[in-house]
Length: 431
Image 1 (spheres, rainbow, N blue to C red):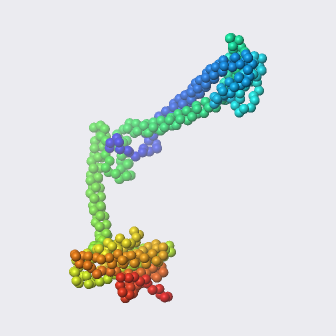
Image 2 (image 1 turned 120 degrees about the vertical axis):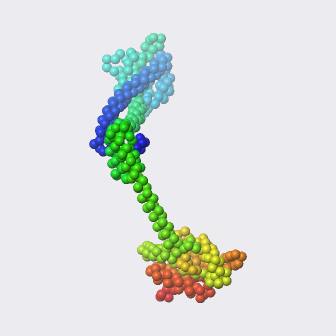
Image 3 (image 1 turned 180 degrees about the vertical axis):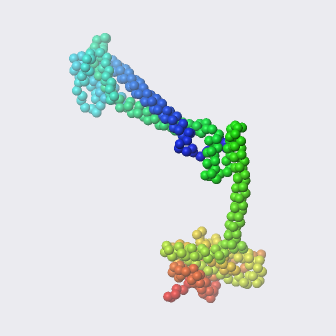
């Protein structure tokens, strides 16, 4: 057996599964620990970068508003803060005088915010940063020519940062899960290949006994006792495979012969249409379905006009050609679900299942008559062929196959008496 062929899965208590499970557990614990460490490191690094960016922004803003503080230009300071507030994570920016009074401020949501008090034990005129899990706060002194003229307070939300870290962590978790799945498949393959040849031979024997697949072969890994046992096992499988192939071929030939015989038994050899035997079975089947489901169906009994004259005047070969051409014409008129059969001689029958109404069958009968009546030339001679149709409905006229066939036959004879090349429907018993 080649390495690419898949052996049946080992039992749940096998050495392969135990080794794979232990290795996978160790790998999962290692990757989980690595994931936790990386997620934590990512959070702190990203938070530190945002703190640094906030400090730089505070310094730039402090430099911008320092002249406004000196000249007490509150509207200009307010405009500067509003322009700065375009930062998406910004919650509050406030400019205070050295005395602690609010000079200008902007707060997310537009509401006025109270003065932000400095953290405990903090000289508010010195650089300071306060960071929590939810937000960060930066205190930046506003200087003009080395003189402190105010304090800038900047507060930002860490919600966006948390969402970004969570998104990265989710993607990393998905990749780790995928890696564990790939590792599981890889470990399973490696453990299987590491098994001893005797275990491989045992699994192959179990597979063959269960699947009856005698085309498998065991691999001879070494020329030792197990290798020689494997060779004898392969020889036995080869003999069984040859015997099974011969038996399968014989069964296929017998089945094909039986199917061919059945097809011949149910088909008219001249026209290729289903014959009387097939018609009898189909009529009973469709009639039962019509009665059970309350659907309207019809049966046409078709007899060719002047066919005896054609045989007597032009010979049986011409008559056979006429039958084949008439069969093709009628088959081209009927619906795909209809069943057209040759009963024998110049008699045909047509089963019409699932009709919407009786008028549909009558219209089809007229189309069939018109198709047969089109000029038919055989060997340069015009054949005076027509068709007379008797029409009976189920379950209106009969609910039994024999009665329905007799009713359509009687209707056909009435059409013959009416002048041929026409159709008549069965007379109801109460008419």
